[in-house]
Length: 386
Image (cartoon, rainbow, N blue to C red):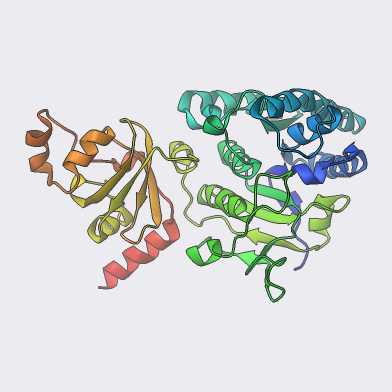
């Protein structure tokens, strides 16, 4: 694939995997970090704003503490993160200072992007750092996160950050140079895909699993990140970071996969809805409701066939087609118990069942973000022809 200038992008988020930054035996790969910072400094000098989502705190901390490769208990992982975060932030600060740049550390928990008020606060803080000319270094706060309240991987965290900040490109530096039709380690005939116009079920089926114990992610989480990013209008690149100056390598034409952003992206408030990582529940709808949603209408109880999950009014739910594919996310107007009671009912029947004057929509169109907007446009066009 020919080279692609990163300099045309206004704001770039770069995600770095643990295995790229930390050697199991010796710790931080300082020479590699220096080369990446050279790339970042070059982009900043050109007027591009750069945010870094850096994995590696636990991996670095366990090396510093001599914990080896054994599976860590939760409290040991959190202790390793506490040690590693200081060392990691210090290394970033020193390398950026060498290039005349300032840095600021941001440690996020899941609630910081999933709860609206905290989302806006995190966005304001990161935005202020960028205005002041600092490079934000962002990571999950692994010292306090548990399995129930964590992102689980920095690919999706990076996508959340990129869309939260209105970025136009997300770069995932990985141990693989892009997307293949199958995991290349398992299938020698797998073909490399230099360009993905849209993440379809067929594209998702190509994903494999994580290949390193230092990394929680795999191609599956990268495609999940891609859906978050591209739906909000952010392009995404997956490329190998296992070379010096990995961002410069993109510009000189080294192999990478580019994911095009949606031609009809969600914006503003709906970006937050569409990017929610773990919906509190799921609503499976009928074909008529699918058509109505694609035409920009609200989701009415009559179109809901199955309700799952334990959610409260105002929580984010996923809307699934009859085939089980997610087509939208939205803020539900009912608690789960009431949603189950009124699923499939016509609007005129709802008040009598619930015993109070109820809302007509299960999810109002103002609180609904379509997950497959190009497909929606195509679907509506076909309906018009019919």
